[in-house]
Length: 154
Image (cartoon, rainbow, N blue to C red; front, side, top):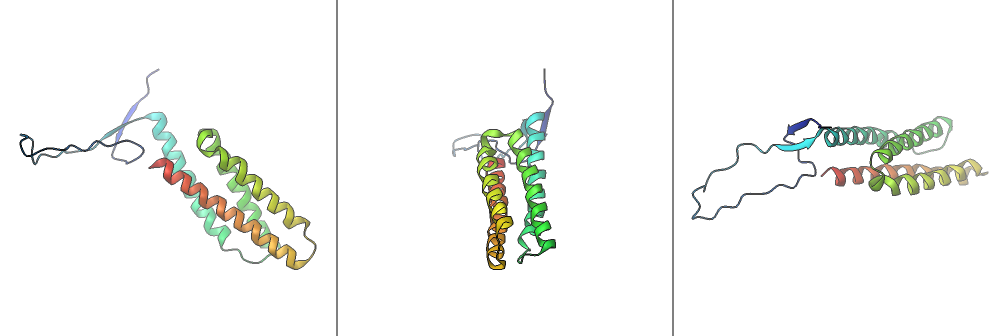
């Protein structure tokens, strides 16, 4: 089965070879007109979908990081952020399990533990402390996932 080939000028995980000319070469001063890279349709769609997930993560980070104190509305915002992050990381994990496997296993487990501690807290001070840890674990997970995506795409 042959796949379509796309030509694009993106700098995504393709090794560039710079042409080096010495002064005795007849091609001195001639530069390539275009740097088109061949990318199969599977890789192209993979990179585009990973880019879309990164945009979702950036929007999610803004909404989750702005929450500071615990109340019903803020707790719902954080829980919704956790659900969205879990869906995004599961999507990334199914597409590239070797790259996003550790994030899927360890970050989600850490967030679940902090969520459980927040629910089980009895005093207001303990709830606020555990809520802050819960929010911070989500923010750190989102940031580390965005770093993984950035390093994978480049």
